[in-house]
Amino acid sequence: MSKEECMEALSKHANIKPVITSTVWNELEKENREFFKSYSQCQSRSQSSTGSDQMSEAETSQLIQKMISAHQADGDDK
Picture 1 (cartoon, rainbow, N blue to C red):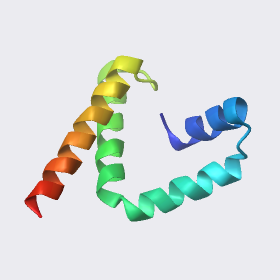
Picture 2 (cartoon, rainbow, N blue to C red):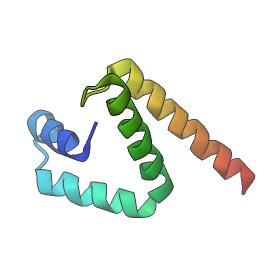
Picture 3 (spheres, rainbow, N blue to C red):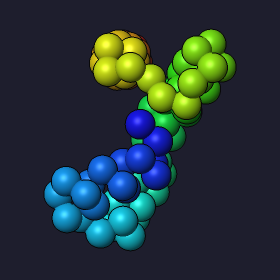
Picture 4 (cartoon, one colour):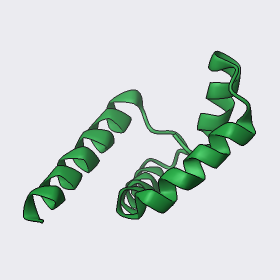
């Protein structure tokens, strides 16, 4: 899910103003650069391989699990 998709979904389903979501997203990007770098790369690869702007729910879950595992592995190395 892109930043814009998150903003739209949270606005629609949780009545959270888009400016709030955008602000939080930006701060998360600052604090978790490696995570968002990986997320962005994986999302780009998925879009180019499927020719679609959206990943399936299964693809999204797999992506998140991969990123969590990679992040935990990085933490174990430190």
